[in-house]
Image 1 (spheres, rainbow, N blue to C red):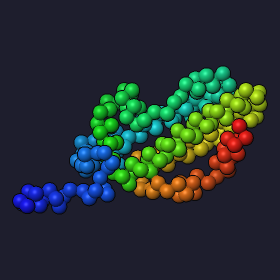
Image 2: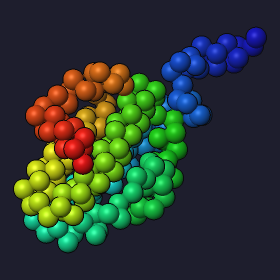
Image 3: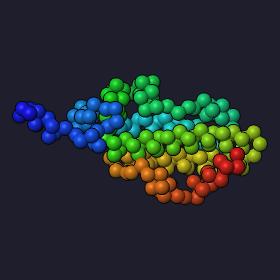
Length: 193
């Protein structure tokens, strides 16, 4: 092994720290991401949360104007890469590359929460639609409140991860963080729909 090989071997990340499918140089990408609205350590961008803030905003409007459900119904889950490809984000290709190389300790809980938000939004849309179809204004408002409340909690947790707070992606830990009346109400509403 040459001196250069030894240096490369000693500075390379262990496999467990490398991102899944990434090139494995998150510190270098962090330096490139500096000042570009991509967190230097996590390599994630809060801009992605706009996709979820959009459905929360639409559902909030549905509570008072059920006709807005038509717009909310069009919302679909969107991958991180697709969000940036479709956005006006100036450094969209860097955002995608950075995400693909995000350290596992951030990427796994981030992806887990995105899956939870997608499922909550889709199930919530069905439950809200059922309440509207039943003509039950009180149920519609309470369902909207429960769904948007849980989505806001997920958005807050996801934002914390994006901004460098370590979390594990164990389901029971995330469930414990979200233990609240809103979450219990949402689970009951979704089961009854």
